[in-house]
Image 1 (cartoon, one colour):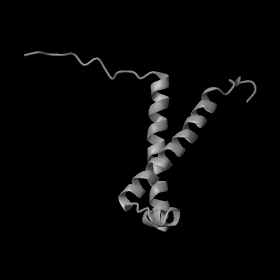
Image 2 (cartoon, helix red, strand yellow; image 1 turned 90 degrees about the horizontal axis):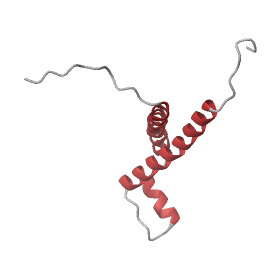
Image 3 (tube, helix red, strand yellow; image 1 turned 90 degrees about the vertical axis):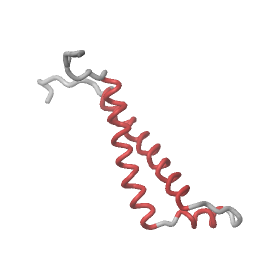
Image 4 (tube, helix red, strand yellow; image 1 turned 45 degrees about the vertical axis):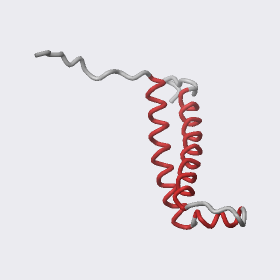
Length: 95
């Protein structure tokens, strides 16, 4: 029988934590944005409006919309994380 000692959780680097936070928050934001957007708009109608002969399946429209919102919110989250990390440090005296 092999017994291994539990050495505790592996510590993530600061960059890995920032990436994980950006990906997770942007995923949740994209899910909510997709639900709200497609509650109002039908993705099959976009194909008709763009090209009369192009037909887009609803599932493909939902997927494209979700990935669009995910990339958009990931970019916003990444810029926010970068601004927070590069902000000048404040002294306790200046608060």
